[in-house]
Length: 178
Image 1 (cartoon, rainbow, N blue to C red):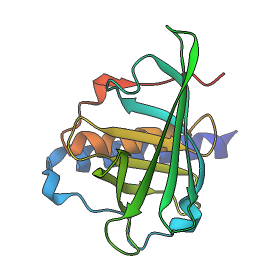
Image 2: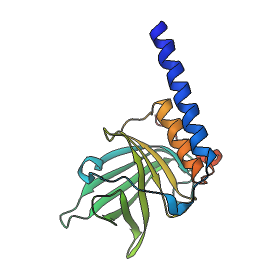
Image 3: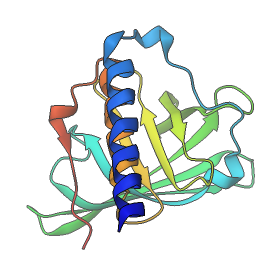
């Protein structure tokens, strides 16, 4: 029991320190760095959307996932889906992505023909189980997990990092996964 309390205290101090450092010096979009080196093959597969800044293409969606796989031309097939709880139907969007810079978490993604947008993996755990992704501006942000849940300490760290770059995390949507 004492070991558990020590770990909880250490975790709380760590989060407090991260919060202080993250919020002490607000950062600019230009200060954002993507994960480098980035192993695209380890990133492929299914991700559960734990949180997002809502926008019209994901409005009213729960059970949201993204699945990434390689196409024959070495581009990345992207399949996003979610259950629209208002319309009571699945919504699926298929697109493609490509690296913006080699061996980095900077990708470009398109769901509308030749138009690509930024998709920046700015934080990922060493086991590639949890990721924080920023879009082209502070209107787009996702917290992703290989599972339907995420440890609280990782969630808090990702939220604090996003806040340090000016993301309004009070507006995050936390989709249900049932």
